[in-house]
Length: 221
Image (cartoon, rainbow, N blue to C red; front, side, top):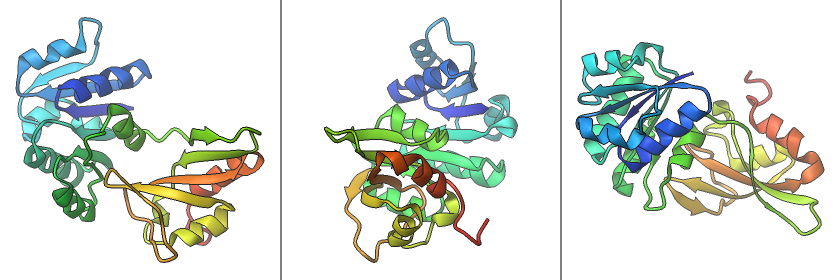
């Protein structure tokens, strides 16, 4: 896979090095050439100096071949513009933008741009959105029989009540993370794009539950 990352600050450089270490190709875009020092001499990806939403800059970064795009600079406006350009002009399906203002983040989520807007924001959270690699175990009870998992959910579940996900997968949704904030769902809570879903399930049934949620709802495939 090829990734384009806009912003080579602490988060952007960490994300780039992590992606490369996993065997993917990556290009990092930043207006400040000195910022690339954070990548270190061993980094083999592309370093592209320029504005992250500029057409020629993105082409140089390999946006036409990109499987995912992350806008993680220090500016909300620049991040969302770049994310929209990557999605709408170049057709990159997987994008994520770092947004500092939670109020703005909610608006951008409605435009179909997943965002992270929390002071506890980390490169790992963005990586999970760019490259879902299965469920992440977050807790296991003392007996080892019950686990709390953060599990990927197929995009076709968006707009469905969370109770439908629970019924289909045989799990209890303990909470979701939406716009960087934890939320305990009610009976009427609907799954939205960008939600991170945390489920409680018996360990012996967890693999099947994860498979169900990672698949389109019955009749929608």
